Length: 438
Image 1 (tube, rainbow, N blue to C red):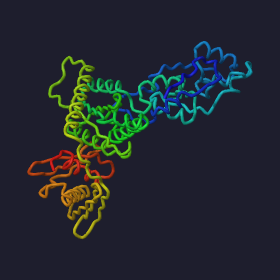
Image 2 (cartoon, rainbow, N blue to C red):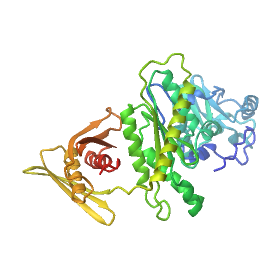
Image 3 (tube, rainbow, N blue to C red):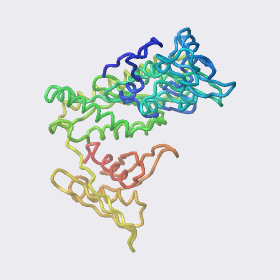
Image 4 (spheres, helix red, strand yellow):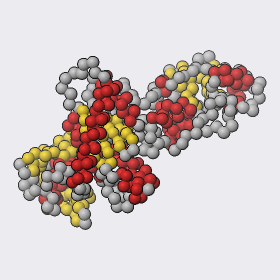
């Protein structure tokens, strides 16, 4: 999308359009990029230059025009003493009686915003209401006006209009901030394996749809409280995370599977991604560290690792597609919890059953293993050893399944959301099938 500039001349009202609408159309609509306590990646209203220029309702229209012209503004607050009454816009003054009072043209329905409002949230509000400006108030005190033009300048350049994700420079900024705060970070780097083929065979329209699908899968599988997702460039995406290294590895495998499960992106071609994971294993405090260089190094190493994984996968050939989860049904019986899991594997349906005194998640995990055994996709001696849920309250949790396969413990994971049994089934598939050991 190309952005047309907002008219900067406050006296040129003809042809006015709302840049907040344009910023909104770029996909920057949800306030989800808050990270850590008191840290932010996106700017807030208070980070914009605000000028508390105002007029009294008894002032004349010509006085308001002079103030706007002198300060280079396209709107003014209207105050009576310490009370904020409304706004006067330049487009309302053009053609108005020059000697009329400002009260005759001011707008009293302007909804104020607080200085700590994220810019993306404000862009959404202004776009939805086609609002050219918004007054900023703190405890009733008028601080100034935010123009839609300001939002376009501060939001537009940092985001990819196709996917709505921030660009890679925001990941670098995110990493530097957390390293300075003494936090450990891990970088996950995703490189689509065969994206060029989609563009060559089906055109860029399908290629753009592929990128949007990948962005949605990654966005849905990450948690903005601890993760920062961005489009790194071309067919590459990156995630910075504050999770432990073990949880970061689990997340990387899960997101890789989510990309591989995308359906109908292009005439039957399967989409896969290589992933590299670096960081999260510091054992000593950094001394005299160059934070930017550390972040750049982690990104570079993760990128190189994903490239090596892509080359290795190309040499080995495309792996078989894992079964999909069709049904997870749970019911209490006299014998205990009865769990039934149906997996789709090609043209076959694999059904597994588990009955016993299990939790819902463990019952579903055992039924999933039974289905894999019945379909010949798991070793007959494979067993579920433990089903646990990790993570902190208020964040997306991860179900971890530990199984024993040929005497060797293997683990799989899946973000739980609100459906623990379904997450447990997918964690079993991750443990027994994603590692190629069956």
